Image (tube, rainbow, N blue to C red; front, side, top):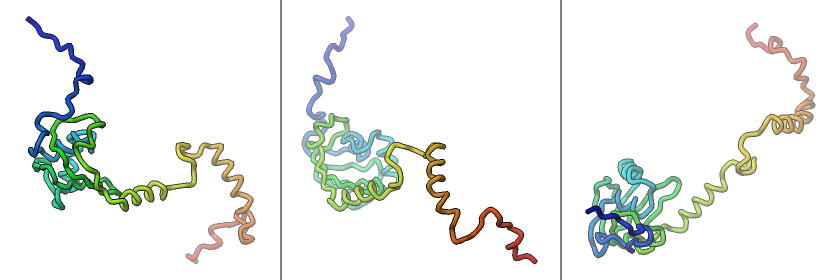
Length: 168
């Protein structure tokens, strides 16, 4: 007799996996992935190996076990995010359940740094317009060109490089 699974996995999602209740332990790379801090577990493990993850102020390996109450620091340049673990889980949960998993204790100055980095970038062109087209380049040359023609009374057309050569 073949049994078919007729339940819809999304509608029957349990609030938290059974292993996450109480004061259990979880691997840091699995916890980072299941808490949706990193998109994949591989990226979380690589971040641990590269020294971007610290638990209670100490850089850790991906296999480090974490418990409830630990403080996790995640460096995603230019910001260092900080989280306090409320539940240890090793299975990914829905985004609506994240407030039960961790508490975000990132200082406000880190968010200010992120905002300054966002607005401090190149501001010469509108976002999403990309590189200048040929038409844009011609318009810029037409705008700048007349101003450069009379620059200091120097005649660019008659300039000869051999006249200013120091090797005589």
